[in-house]
Amino acid sequence: MTSRHDHWQTVYSTKSDTAVSWFQERPETSLELVTAGGLPLDARIIDVGGGASRLVDALLDAGYSALTVLDIAPAALDAARARLGARADAVQWVAADITAWSPTTPFDAWHDRAVFHFLTDAADRAAYRAALTAGIRRGGRVIIGTFAPDGPEKCSGLPVMRYTPELLAAELGDNFALLDARQEDHATPSGAIQHFQFSVFARR
Image (cartoon, rainbow, N blue to C red; front, side, top):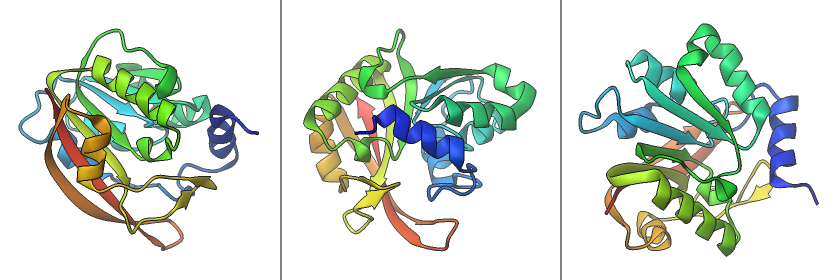
């Protein structure tokens, strides 16, 4: 059985980042939700599963200076670094599985577009919650994007779990208060439409 690491390393080693179904030229919803409420430019922000996403580009363009991108696939991080060139030196890059990672200092904002919904095993979700709880300060902002209930049942050949904001809130538990939610219709490079939902939480 292929490991989670090997699966995603193969994806990013064999496909252009612009060819994968989750590609966004500019992740408007993520950017808006991360920066809402006047998040200061020196806020510590982590993009979990950020891979080759262009969210880091947009945050750098907006003036944010304390950015971390975590992904299980080093090849994804390499693609982002190559794209950013010299600007990549301003970002902390972490090659790790979020279910086996221990943050050393808390972040002000935590963003995850389409990592949590791949965690179909309860033990993996518990490990993610542990990393999240340790990795976000009290009052910090958590943005998690998953497939909506009418979204795909699989992505990249893997099964996923689909969530409403309320189901996601129940999964995260009492340490996190649901603040906001919105739907996004994501158009893939092939023209298909995937229904996402983004939920915003505050760490209690």
